[in-house]
Image 1 (cartoon, helix red, strand yellow):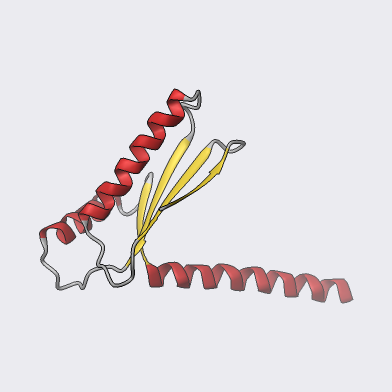
Image 2 (cartoon, one colour):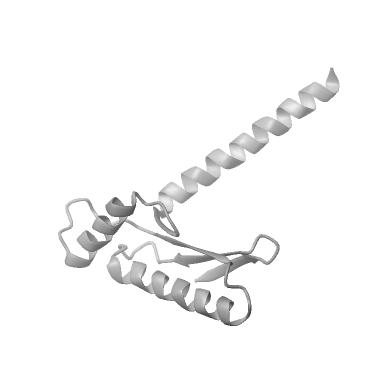
Amino acid sequence: MFLLGSSGLRRLVIVELKAPNTSLDGTHLRQLQDYMREAKRWLSDKGFPDCQVEGYLIGSMAEPSSRAKEVEWLRDQMEQTRNRGDWRVYDILEVLELSERAHQELLDAYQELQKAKKI
């Protein structure tokens, strides 16, 4: 788990990164939610009750055929929230793909800027 925070933005991001050889399940999400709840309480006690706390659970999604109770519970939670809100769950490969696309967009913008400077 690691934290990213900005007092100026009044935002705290908690990232729970699981080992790639462990399939994500409900126990992992509840752990993240506990961290978020504790962080909100701590921030409120320190005078920052309006600080936004977000959580990201990143790891390997279970096989679609998995019928394990905790895996199904996690899937249900993700479906109910449409994986939006104060917490989100991502497969590690999805995170890598999103990162690659974001970096490519930055590179493309930089190259366009360099071309415009030459004109």
